[in-house]
Image (cartoon, rainbow, N blue to C red; front, side):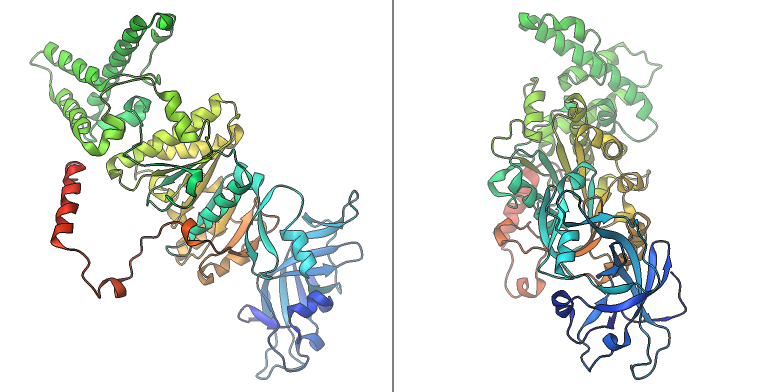
Length: 567
Protein backbone atom coordinates (compact mmCIF):
# COMPACT_ATOMS: atom_id res chain seq x y z
CA UNK A 1 0.00 0.00 0.00
CA UNK A 2 1.51 3.29 -1.09
CA UNK A 3 1.60 6.16 1.34
CA UNK A 4 3.20 9.59 1.10
CA UNK A 5 5.31 8.95 4.18
CA UNK A 6 8.90 8.93 5.34
CA UNK A 7 9.90 5.35 6.07
CA UNK A 8 12.08 4.64 9.09
CA UNK A 9 14.68 1.89 9.36
CA UNK A 10 12.50 -1.12 10.09
CA UNK A 11 11.30 -0.17 13.59
CA UNK A 12 9.34 2.36 15.65
CA UNK A 13 9.17 2.77 19.44
CA UNK A 14 5.94 1.39 20.83
CA UNK A 15 6.20 0.38 24.47
CA UNK A 16 8.35 1.51 27.37
CA UNK A 17 8.36 -1.99 28.82
CA UNK A 18 9.24 -3.96 25.66
CA UNK A 19 7.59 -7.01 24.06
CA UNK A 20 7.70 -8.91 27.34
CA UNK A 21 5.15 -6.51 28.75
CA UNK A 22 2.88 -7.21 25.81
CA UNK A 23 3.16 -10.93 26.50
CA UNK A 24 2.32 -10.52 30.16
CA UNK A 25 -0.48 -7.98 29.73
CA UNK A 26 -1.64 -7.66 26.11
CA UNK A 27 -2.49 -4.05 25.51
CA UNK A 28 -3.42 -2.01 22.49
CA UNK A 29 -0.50 -0.33 20.74
CA UNK A 30 -2.55 1.30 18.01
CA UNK A 31 -5.69 1.10 15.91
CA UNK A 32 -6.62 0.49 12.29
CA UNK A 33 -7.07 3.51 10.05
CA UNK A 34 -7.04 1.88 6.61
CA UNK A 35 -7.89 -1.52 5.09
CA UNK A 36 -7.37 -2.36 1.43
CA UNK A 37 -7.50 -5.96 0.26
CA UNK A 38 -4.94 -7.98 2.20
CA UNK A 39 -3.19 -4.86 3.57
CA UNK A 40 -4.00 -2.62 6.49
CA UNK A 41 -2.51 0.47 8.16
CA UNK A 42 -2.52 1.21 11.86
CA UNK A 43 -1.69 4.38 13.76
CA UNK A 44 0.37 3.84 16.89
CA UNK A 45 -1.17 5.18 20.07
CA UNK A 46 0.73 8.29 21.13
CA UNK A 47 0.68 7.41 24.79
CA UNK A 48 2.22 4.04 24.03
CA UNK A 49 4.62 5.17 21.33
CA UNK A 50 6.14 7.99 23.35
CA UNK A 51 5.49 7.07 26.97
CA UNK A 52 8.49 7.92 29.13
CA UNK A 53 11.99 7.93 27.69
CA UNK A 54 12.55 4.19 27.10
CA UNK A 55 13.16 3.47 23.45
CA UNK A 56 14.30 -0.15 23.67
CA UNK A 57 10.91 -1.64 22.75
CA UNK A 58 10.45 -1.46 19.01
CA UNK A 59 8.02 -2.93 16.54
CA UNK A 60 10.05 -4.53 13.76
CA UNK A 61 9.34 -5.42 10.18
CA UNK A 62 8.43 -9.08 10.06
CA UNK A 63 6.88 -9.09 13.54
CA UNK A 64 3.47 -10.65 14.05
CA UNK A 65 0.70 -8.47 15.47
CA UNK A 66 -2.91 -9.13 16.36
CA UNK A 67 -5.95 -7.10 15.35
CA UNK A 68 -8.95 -7.68 17.58
CA UNK A 69 -12.31 -7.59 15.79
CA UNK A 70 -15.78 -8.21 17.27
CA UNK A 71 -15.79 -11.82 15.93
CA UNK A 72 -12.15 -12.94 15.75
CA UNK A 73 -8.50 -11.96 16.04
CA UNK A 74 -6.79 -11.23 12.72
CA UNK A 75 -3.05 -11.73 12.52
CA UNK A 76 -0.83 -9.58 10.35
CA UNK A 77 2.86 -9.27 9.53
CA UNK A 78 4.47 -5.84 9.84
CA UNK A 79 5.70 -4.83 6.38
CA UNK A 80 6.72 -1.18 6.98
CA UNK A 81 6.82 1.51 9.63
CA UNK A 82 6.87 5.23 8.96
CA UNK A 83 6.14 8.71 10.20
CA UNK A 84 4.15 10.92 7.80
CA UNK A 85 4.96 14.12 9.74
CA UNK A 86 8.48 13.68 11.11
CA UNK A 87 9.95 16.21 13.50
CA UNK A 88 13.47 16.81 14.71
CA UNK A 89 12.51 15.82 18.23
CA UNK A 90 10.14 12.87 18.48
CA UNK A 91 7.27 13.91 20.66
CA UNK A 92 3.58 13.60 21.31
CA UNK A 93 2.70 15.23 18.00
CA UNK A 94 4.62 12.76 15.85
CA UNK A 95 2.44 10.08 14.30
CA UNK A 96 3.68 6.54 13.78
CA UNK A 97 2.18 4.36 11.04
CA UNK A 98 2.48 0.59 10.75
CA UNK A 99 1.71 -1.18 7.47
CA UNK A 100 0.48 -4.76 7.79
CA UNK A 101 0.01 -7.75 5.51
CA UNK A 102 -3.00 -9.72 6.75
CA UNK A 103 -2.20 -13.43 6.90
CA UNK A 104 -4.77 -15.36 8.94
CA UNK A 105 -6.93 -15.40 12.01
CA UNK A 106 -7.42 -17.14 15.34
CA UNK A 107 -10.72 -19.00 15.49
CA UNK A 108 -12.38 -21.28 18.01
CA UNK A 109 -12.06 -24.93 17.05
CA UNK A 110 -15.55 -26.50 17.50
CA UNK A 111 -14.10 -29.86 18.57
CA UNK A 112 -11.35 -28.91 21.00
CA UNK A 113 -12.95 -25.58 21.99
CA UNK A 114 -9.51 -24.00 21.73
CA UNK A 115 -8.21 -21.15 19.66
CA UNK A 116 -6.41 -22.35 16.52
CA UNK A 117 -4.75 -20.54 13.65
CA UNK A 118 -6.37 -20.59 10.22
CA UNK A 119 -4.87 -19.21 7.03
CA UNK A 120 -6.89 -16.62 5.20
CA UNK A 121 -9.08 -13.91 6.67
CA UNK A 122 -12.83 -14.42 6.68
CA UNK A 123 -13.60 -11.36 8.85
CA UNK A 124 -11.58 -8.33 7.77
CA UNK A 125 -10.72 -5.71 10.36
CA UNK A 126 -12.33 -2.30 10.18
CA UNK A 127 -11.54 1.26 11.21
CA UNK A 128 -10.77 1.67 14.87
CA UNK A 129 -10.07 -2.01 15.61
CA UNK A 130 -7.27 -2.22 18.20
CA UNK A 131 -3.82 -3.58 17.31
CA UNK A 132 -1.58 -5.31 19.84
CA UNK A 133 1.52 -7.45 19.97
CA UNK A 134 0.99 -11.14 19.29
CA UNK A 135 1.92 -12.71 22.61
CA UNK A 136 3.79 -15.96 23.11
CA UNK A 137 0.60 -17.99 23.13
CA UNK A 138 -0.42 -16.48 19.80
CA UNK A 139 3.00 -17.18 18.30
CA UNK A 140 2.84 -20.77 19.50
CA UNK A 141 -0.61 -21.28 18.01
CA UNK A 142 0.65 -20.04 14.66
CA UNK A 143 4.19 -21.37 14.37
CA UNK A 144 4.24 -24.41 16.67
CA UNK A 145 0.89 -26.03 16.17
CA UNK A 146 0.59 -29.31 18.10
CA UNK A 147 -1.51 -31.08 15.48
CA UNK A 148 0.06 -32.61 12.38
CA UNK A 149 3.52 -34.05 11.76
CA UNK A 150 6.20 -31.42 12.17
CA UNK A 151 9.87 -31.03 13.09
CA UNK A 152 11.62 -28.37 15.16
CA UNK A 153 14.55 -26.88 13.27
CA UNK A 154 15.19 -23.70 15.21
CA UNK A 155 13.56 -20.80 16.99
CA UNK A 156 11.44 -17.86 15.95
CA UNK A 157 13.32 -14.60 15.48
CA UNK A 158 10.51 -12.60 17.10
CA UNK A 159 10.62 -14.72 20.27
CA UNK A 160 13.45 -17.24 20.70
CA UNK A 161 11.35 -19.20 23.21
CA UNK A 162 8.92 -20.18 20.43
CA UNK A 163 10.15 -23.14 18.35
CA UNK A 164 10.25 -22.87 14.56
CA UNK A 165 8.60 -25.94 13.10
CA UNK A 166 8.29 -27.26 9.55
CA UNK A 167 5.31 -29.34 8.44
CA UNK A 168 6.85 -32.60 7.24
CA UNK A 169 4.25 -33.81 4.74
CA UNK A 170 3.83 -30.42 3.09
CA UNK A 171 7.60 -29.86 3.06
CA UNK A 172 8.58 -33.20 1.54
CA UNK A 173 5.65 -34.06 -0.71
CA UNK A 174 5.75 -30.77 -2.63
CA UNK A 175 9.52 -30.16 -3.02
CA UNK A 176 11.55 -27.52 -1.18
CA UNK A 177 14.59 -25.36 -1.88
CA UNK A 178 17.32 -23.83 0.28
CA UNK A 179 18.96 -20.72 -1.19
CA UNK A 180 21.69 -18.45 0.12
CA UNK A 181 25.08 -17.04 -0.64
CA UNK A 182 28.30 -18.91 0.10
CA UNK A 183 29.06 -19.20 3.82
CA UNK A 184 25.59 -18.34 5.16
CA UNK A 185 24.88 -21.88 6.41
CA UNK A 186 22.90 -23.60 3.64
CA UNK A 187 24.52 -26.98 4.21
CA UNK A 188 24.04 -26.70 7.96
CA UNK A 189 20.38 -25.78 7.50
CA UNK A 190 19.82 -28.72 5.16
CA UNK A 191 21.59 -31.09 7.55
CA UNK A 192 19.48 -29.83 10.45
CA UNK A 193 16.27 -30.49 8.51
CA UNK A 194 17.27 -33.98 7.39
CA UNK A 195 18.56 -34.95 10.84
CA UNK A 196 15.28 -33.90 12.48
CA UNK A 197 13.29 -35.92 9.95
CA UNK A 198 15.48 -38.99 10.50
CA UNK A 199 15.12 -38.74 14.28
CA UNK A 200 11.43 -39.56 14.00
CA UNK A 201 11.33 -41.62 10.79
CA UNK A 202 13.51 -44.71 10.88
CA UNK A 203 12.32 -46.01 7.52
CA UNK A 204 12.97 -42.97 5.38
CA UNK A 205 14.51 -43.24 1.91
CA UNK A 206 16.81 -40.28 1.21
CA UNK A 207 19.60 -39.85 -1.31
CA UNK A 208 22.02 -36.89 -1.15
CA UNK A 209 24.06 -35.90 -4.21
CA UNK A 210 27.10 -34.46 -2.43
CA UNK A 211 29.21 -32.59 -5.00
CA UNK A 212 31.59 -31.05 -2.43
CA UNK A 213 32.11 -33.97 -0.03
CA UNK A 214 30.44 -32.08 2.83
CA UNK A 215 28.19 -34.75 4.34
CA UNK A 216 30.22 -37.93 5.00
CA UNK A 217 30.01 -37.47 8.79
CA UNK A 218 26.80 -35.45 9.09
CA UNK A 219 24.50 -38.45 9.56
CA UNK A 220 26.84 -40.84 11.32
CA UNK A 221 25.88 -44.50 11.25
CA UNK A 222 22.53 -43.69 9.64
CA UNK A 223 24.18 -43.03 6.27
CA UNK A 224 25.31 -45.35 3.52
CA UNK A 225 28.35 -43.47 2.24
CA UNK A 226 29.18 -44.05 -1.42
CA UNK A 227 32.09 -42.67 -3.40
CA UNK A 228 33.60 -43.48 -6.81
CA UNK A 229 35.75 -46.21 -5.22
CA UNK A 230 32.73 -48.26 -4.10
CA UNK A 231 30.08 -46.96 -6.49
CA UNK A 232 28.75 -49.39 -9.06
CA UNK A 233 26.79 -47.67 -11.80
CA UNK A 234 27.24 -49.92 -14.85
CA UNK A 235 27.15 -48.37 -18.30
CA UNK A 236 24.11 -50.42 -19.32
CA UNK A 237 21.96 -48.49 -16.82
CA UNK A 238 22.30 -45.40 -19.00
CA UNK A 239 19.51 -44.72 -21.45
CA UNK A 240 20.47 -43.93 -25.00
CA UNK A 241 20.26 -40.15 -24.61
CA UNK A 242 22.70 -40.30 -21.69
CA UNK A 243 24.93 -42.75 -23.52
CA UNK A 244 25.04 -40.50 -26.57
CA UNK A 245 26.09 -37.51 -24.49
CA UNK A 246 28.84 -39.55 -22.86
CA UNK A 247 30.29 -41.28 -25.95
CA UNK A 248 29.68 -39.20 -29.05
CA UNK A 249 31.40 -36.04 -30.21
CA UNK A 250 29.72 -32.66 -30.51
CA UNK A 251 30.76 -31.79 -34.06
CA UNK A 252 29.46 -32.71 -37.49
CA UNK A 253 30.14 -36.43 -36.93
CA UNK A 254 27.69 -36.63 -34.02
CA UNK A 255 24.70 -37.77 -36.06
CA UNK A 256 26.64 -40.54 -37.76
CA UNK A 257 28.22 -41.67 -34.48
CA UNK A 258 24.79 -41.73 -32.82
CA UNK A 259 23.39 -44.02 -35.51
CA UNK A 260 26.38 -46.37 -35.25
CA UNK A 261 26.13 -46.41 -31.45
CA UNK A 262 22.42 -47.22 -31.56
CA UNK A 263 22.95 -50.26 -33.79
CA UNK A 264 25.95 -51.37 -31.74
CA UNK A 265 24.13 -51.18 -28.39
CA UNK A 266 21.13 -53.16 -29.65
CA UNK A 267 23.52 -55.76 -31.10
CA UNK A 268 25.40 -56.04 -27.79
CA UNK A 269 22.22 -56.31 -25.73
CA UNK A 270 20.84 -59.08 -27.93
CA UNK A 271 24.10 -60.96 -27.77
CA UNK A 272 24.25 -60.81 -23.97
CA UNK A 273 20.60 -61.81 -23.52
CA UNK A 274 20.93 -64.73 -25.92
CA UNK A 275 24.00 -65.97 -24.07
CA UNK A 276 22.24 -65.63 -20.72
CA UNK A 277 19.23 -67.59 -21.95
CA UNK A 278 21.42 -70.42 -23.18
CA UNK A 279 23.36 -70.62 -19.90
CA UNK A 280 20.27 -70.73 -17.71
CA UNK A 281 17.35 -72.85 -18.78
CA UNK A 282 15.12 -71.08 -16.30
CA UNK A 283 15.61 -67.93 -18.29
CA UNK A 284 14.61 -69.48 -21.58
CA UNK A 285 11.17 -67.96 -21.33
CA UNK A 286 12.80 -64.54 -21.54
CA UNK A 287 13.87 -65.09 -25.14
CA UNK A 288 10.58 -63.74 -26.40
CA UNK A 289 10.89 -60.73 -24.14
CA UNK A 290 14.43 -59.98 -25.30
CA UNK A 291 13.45 -60.35 -28.94
CA UNK A 292 11.88 -56.91 -28.58
CA UNK A 293 14.97 -55.31 -27.07
CA UNK A 294 15.38 -51.64 -27.89
CA UNK A 295 18.25 -49.27 -27.37
CA UNK A 296 16.66 -48.06 -24.08
CA UNK A 297 15.81 -51.48 -22.62
CA UNK A 298 17.54 -51.62 -19.18
CA UNK A 299 19.33 -54.91 -19.76
CA UNK A 300 23.07 -55.65 -19.43
CA UNK A 301 25.52 -55.68 -22.32
CA UNK A 302 29.27 -55.57 -22.86
CA UNK A 303 31.04 -52.60 -24.35
CA UNK A 304 33.44 -55.09 -25.90
CA UNK A 305 30.52 -56.33 -28.00
CA UNK A 306 29.81 -52.76 -29.10
CA UNK A 307 33.47 -52.42 -30.15
CA UNK A 308 33.28 -55.78 -31.94
CA UNK A 309 30.22 -54.55 -33.84
CA UNK A 310 32.09 -51.40 -34.90
CA UNK A 311 35.07 -53.48 -36.09
CA UNK A 312 32.72 -55.72 -38.06
CA UNK A 313 31.09 -52.73 -39.72
CA UNK A 314 34.49 -51.24 -40.54
CA UNK A 315 35.39 -54.44 -42.38
CA UNK A 316 32.29 -54.16 -44.50
CA UNK A 317 32.73 -50.52 -45.54
CA UNK A 318 33.74 -49.71 -49.08
CA UNK A 319 36.33 -47.06 -49.77
CA UNK A 320 33.70 -44.49 -50.74
CA UNK A 321 32.34 -44.28 -47.19
CA UNK A 322 34.11 -42.41 -44.42
CA UNK A 323 35.47 -44.46 -41.54
CA UNK A 324 35.95 -41.42 -39.28
CA UNK A 325 32.69 -41.77 -37.22
CA UNK A 326 33.43 -45.47 -36.57
CA UNK A 327 37.04 -44.89 -35.52
CA UNK A 328 36.24 -41.88 -33.32
CA UNK A 329 33.47 -43.75 -31.51
CA UNK A 330 35.69 -46.78 -30.99
CA UNK A 331 38.53 -44.63 -29.67
CA UNK A 332 36.22 -42.83 -27.25
CA UNK A 333 34.89 -46.11 -25.83
CA UNK A 334 38.37 -47.60 -25.43
CA UNK A 335 39.63 -44.40 -23.76
CA UNK A 336 36.85 -44.39 -21.17
CA UNK A 337 37.23 -48.09 -20.43
CA UNK A 338 40.95 -47.73 -19.76
CA UNK A 339 40.62 -44.56 -17.64
CA UNK A 340 40.56 -45.43 -13.92
CA UNK A 341 38.48 -42.33 -13.12
CA UNK A 342 35.54 -43.94 -14.90
CA UNK A 343 35.95 -47.43 -13.49
CA UNK A 344 32.71 -47.22 -11.49
CA UNK A 345 30.84 -47.03 -14.80
CA UNK A 346 33.07 -48.51 -17.53
CA UNK A 347 35.63 -50.61 -15.74
CA UNK A 348 33.86 -53.81 -14.64
CA UNK A 349 35.55 -56.96 -15.95
CA UNK A 350 32.35 -58.97 -15.72
CA UNK A 351 28.83 -57.98 -16.69
CA UNK A 352 25.96 -59.14 -14.54
CA UNK A 353 22.36 -58.10 -14.09
CA UNK A 354 22.79 -56.16 -10.82
CA UNK A 355 19.96 -53.68 -11.34
CA UNK A 356 18.07 -54.78 -8.22
CA UNK A 357 21.20 -54.58 -6.06
CA UNK A 358 22.14 -51.16 -7.45
CA UNK A 359 18.68 -49.71 -6.87
CA UNK A 360 18.49 -51.24 -3.40
CA UNK A 361 21.77 -49.70 -2.31
CA UNK A 362 21.01 -46.27 -3.73
CA UNK A 363 17.48 -45.99 -2.40
CA UNK A 364 17.85 -48.09 0.78
CA UNK A 365 15.80 -51.22 0.07
CA UNK A 366 16.16 -52.76 2.57
CA UNK A 367 17.44 -49.86 4.62
CA UNK A 368 19.52 -52.01 7.05
CA UNK A 369 19.44 -49.25 9.65
CA UNK A 370 20.69 -46.69 7.13
CA UNK A 371 17.77 -44.64 5.81
CA UNK A 372 19.94 -42.14 3.92
CA UNK A 373 22.50 -42.54 1.14
CA UNK A 374 25.22 -39.92 0.66
CA UNK A 375 27.01 -40.11 -2.70
CA UNK A 376 30.31 -38.24 -2.74
CA UNK A 377 30.64 -36.88 -6.28
CA UNK A 378 33.49 -34.45 -5.57
CA UNK A 379 36.08 -36.61 -7.34
CA UNK A 380 33.93 -37.60 -10.30
CA UNK A 381 35.37 -36.02 -13.47
CA UNK A 382 33.40 -32.99 -14.60
CA UNK A 383 32.83 -34.42 -18.08
CA UNK A 384 30.99 -37.43 -16.63
CA UNK A 385 29.40 -35.82 -13.53
CA UNK A 386 26.27 -34.76 -15.37
CA UNK A 387 25.84 -38.26 -16.74
CA UNK A 388 26.02 -39.76 -13.24
CA UNK A 389 23.49 -37.30 -11.83
CA UNK A 390 21.18 -37.81 -14.80
CA UNK A 391 21.23 -41.60 -14.37
CA UNK A 392 20.52 -41.41 -10.62
CA UNK A 393 17.68 -38.89 -11.06
CA UNK A 394 16.11 -40.93 -13.84
CA UNK A 395 16.41 -44.17 -11.90
CA UNK A 396 14.73 -42.51 -8.92
CA UNK A 397 11.82 -41.38 -11.06
CA UNK A 398 11.44 -44.71 -12.89
CA UNK A 399 11.54 -46.61 -9.58
CA UNK A 400 8.88 -44.30 -8.15
CA UNK A 401 6.66 -44.82 -11.19
CA UNK A 402 7.04 -48.60 -11.36
CA UNK A 403 6.49 -48.92 -7.61
CA UNK A 404 3.28 -46.89 -8.05
CA UNK A 405 4.24 -44.53 -5.23
CA UNK A 406 4.90 -47.36 -2.81
CA UNK A 407 8.41 -46.13 -1.98
CA UNK A 408 8.37 -42.45 -0.90
CA UNK A 409 11.82 -41.01 -1.59
CA UNK A 410 13.67 -37.71 -1.21
CA UNK A 411 16.38 -36.75 -3.71
CA UNK A 412 18.67 -33.99 -2.38
CA UNK A 413 20.55 -31.99 -5.02
CA UNK A 414 23.43 -29.80 -3.86
CA UNK A 415 24.53 -27.01 -6.24
CA UNK A 416 21.37 -27.62 -8.26
CA UNK A 417 22.06 -24.71 -10.62
CA UNK A 418 25.11 -26.55 -11.96
CA UNK A 419 23.19 -29.45 -13.48
CA UNK A 420 19.73 -27.92 -13.92
CA UNK A 421 20.71 -24.51 -15.32
CA UNK A 422 18.33 -21.84 -16.56
CA UNK A 423 20.14 -21.61 -19.89
CA UNK A 424 19.29 -24.49 -22.21
CA UNK A 425 22.59 -23.96 -24.00
CA UNK A 426 24.55 -24.89 -20.90
CA UNK A 427 25.41 -28.18 -19.30
CA UNK A 428 23.87 -31.57 -19.82
CA UNK A 429 20.36 -31.61 -21.26
CA UNK A 430 19.32 -35.08 -19.93
CA UNK A 431 20.14 -34.02 -16.35
CA UNK A 432 18.01 -30.90 -16.59
CA UNK A 433 15.20 -32.91 -18.15
CA UNK A 434 15.38 -35.62 -15.48
CA UNK A 435 15.16 -33.11 -12.61
CA UNK A 436 12.45 -31.13 -14.38
CA UNK A 437 10.42 -34.30 -14.77
CA UNK A 438 10.73 -35.07 -11.07
CA UNK A 439 9.78 -31.50 -10.22
CA UNK A 440 6.64 -31.62 -12.36
CA UNK A 441 5.49 -35.22 -11.87
CA UNK A 442 7.44 -36.72 -8.97
CA UNK A 443 4.95 -35.82 -6.25
CA UNK A 444 2.32 -38.03 -7.92
CA UNK A 445 4.56 -41.04 -7.27
CA UNK A 446 5.98 -40.12 -3.87
CA UNK A 447 9.30 -38.72 -5.16
CA UNK A 448 10.33 -35.33 -3.80
CA UNK A 449 13.19 -32.93 -4.49
CA UNK A 450 15.27 -30.91 -2.04
CA UNK A 451 17.35 -28.37 -3.94
CA UNK A 452 20.26 -26.34 -2.60
CA UNK A 453 21.74 -23.44 -4.56
CA UNK A 454 23.60 -20.18 -4.07
CA UNK A 455 22.40 -18.84 -7.42
CA UNK A 456 18.63 -19.25 -7.80
CA UNK A 457 18.76 -16.93 -10.82
CA UNK A 458 20.79 -19.59 -12.66
CA UNK A 459 18.41 -22.45 -11.79
CA UNK A 460 15.92 -23.77 -14.33
CA UNK A 461 12.74 -21.69 -13.72
CA UNK A 462 10.54 -24.75 -14.26
CA UNK A 463 12.28 -26.61 -11.45
CA UNK A 464 12.29 -23.58 -9.15
CA UNK A 465 8.60 -22.85 -9.67
CA UNK A 466 7.65 -26.35 -8.53
CA UNK A 467 9.21 -25.89 -5.08
CA UNK A 468 6.30 -25.18 -2.74
CA UNK A 469 8.50 -24.30 0.25
CA UNK A 470 11.47 -21.94 0.17
CA UNK A 471 14.09 -21.52 2.89
CA UNK A 472 15.74 -18.26 1.91
CA UNK A 473 18.98 -17.39 3.65
CA UNK A 474 21.24 -14.42 3.01
CA UNK A 475 21.31 -13.38 -0.65
CA UNK A 476 23.48 -10.48 -1.76
CA UNK A 477 22.86 -10.07 -5.49
CA UNK A 478 19.79 -8.22 -6.71
CA UNK A 479 19.28 -10.72 -9.52
CA UNK A 480 18.93 -13.63 -7.11
CA UNK A 481 16.67 -11.61 -4.82
CA UNK A 482 14.44 -10.71 -7.77
CA UNK A 483 14.02 -14.38 -8.70
CA UNK A 484 12.96 -15.24 -5.15
CA UNK A 485 10.49 -12.35 -5.09
CA UNK A 486 8.99 -13.59 -8.35
CA UNK A 487 8.35 -16.98 -6.73
CA UNK A 488 7.07 -15.58 -3.42
CA UNK A 489 3.54 -15.89 -2.12
CA UNK A 490 1.72 -15.95 1.20
CA UNK A 491 2.42 -12.28 1.87
CA UNK A 492 6.15 -12.86 2.38
CA UNK A 493 7.25 -10.37 -0.28
CA UNK A 494 8.13 -7.64 2.20
CA UNK A 495 10.08 -10.08 4.36
CA UNK A 496 12.41 -10.79 1.44
CA UNK A 497 13.74 -7.25 1.69
CA UNK A 498 15.68 -8.62 4.67
CA UNK A 499 17.60 -11.19 2.60
CA UNK A 500 20.83 -9.15 2.34
CA UNK A 501 20.71 -8.46 6.11
CA UNK A 502 20.22 -11.98 7.46
CA UNK A 503 22.91 -13.39 9.72
CA UNK A 504 24.50 -16.82 9.45
CA UNK A 505 22.01 -19.67 10.01
CA UNK A 506 19.09 -17.21 9.78
CA UNK A 507 16.39 -17.72 7.18
CA UNK A 508 13.03 -16.56 6.00
CA UNK A 509 10.80 -19.58 5.41
CA UNK A 510 7.63 -19.38 3.37
CA UNK A 511 5.33 -21.66 1.41
CA UNK A 512 3.36 -24.82 2.12
CA UNK A 513 5.88 -26.23 4.61
CA UNK A 514 5.12 -23.60 7.26
CA UNK A 515 1.93 -22.34 8.83
CA UNK A 516 2.89 -18.76 7.96
CA UNK A 517 5.98 -16.99 6.59
CA UNK A 518 8.51 -16.67 9.39
CA UNK A 519 12.01 -15.47 10.11
CA UNK A 520 13.94 -18.11 12.04
CA UNK A 521 17.36 -19.04 13.34
CA UNK A 522 18.40 -22.66 12.89
CA UNK A 523 19.47 -24.67 15.92
CA UNK A 524 23.14 -25.05 16.80
CA UNK A 525 24.65 -28.40 15.85
CA UNK A 526 27.36 -30.52 17.43
CA UNK A 527 30.71 -30.40 15.64
CA UNK A 528 30.63 -34.11 14.83
CA UNK A 529 27.29 -33.81 13.00
CA UNK A 530 27.96 -30.63 11.07
CA UNK A 531 28.64 -30.79 7.35
CA UNK A 532 32.31 -30.54 6.52
CA UNK A 533 33.55 -27.12 5.41
CA UNK A 534 36.56 -26.64 3.18
CA UNK A 535 37.26 -22.96 3.76
CA UNK A 536 40.87 -22.31 4.66
CA UNK A 537 42.12 -19.81 7.21
CA UNK A 538 44.92 -18.15 5.31
CA UNK A 539 46.04 -16.06 8.28
CA UNK A 540 46.82 -19.22 10.26
CA UNK A 541 47.86 -21.52 7.41
CA UNK A 542 50.53 -19.17 6.12
CA UNK A 543 52.32 -18.89 9.45
CA UNK A 544 53.95 -22.32 9.07
CA UNK A 545 55.04 -24.63 6.21
CA UNK A 546 52.07 -26.34 4.60
CA UNK A 547 53.60 -29.03 2.37
CA UNK A 548 56.89 -30.81 1.92
CA UNK A 549 58.37 -32.04 -1.36
CA UNK A 550 57.61 -35.61 -0.31
CA UNK A 551 53.96 -34.75 0.24
CA UNK A 552 53.81 -33.05 -3.16
CA UNK A 553 55.32 -36.14 -4.80
CA UNK A 554 52.68 -38.32 -3.12
CA UNK A 555 49.93 -36.04 -4.44
CA UNK A 556 51.32 -36.21 -7.97
CA UNK A 557 51.49 -40.02 -7.73
CA UNK A 558 47.84 -40.23 -6.69
CA UNK A 559 46.95 -37.76 -9.41
CA UNK A 560 48.57 -39.89 -12.10
CA UNK A 561 47.20 -43.13 -10.66
CA UNK A 562 43.64 -41.82 -10.84
CA UNK A 563 43.88 -41.51 -14.61
CA UNK A 564 45.07 -39.29 -17.38
CA UNK A 565 45.46 -35.61 -16.79
CA UNK A 566 42.30 -33.79 -17.74
CA UNK A 567 42.66 -31.98 -21.01
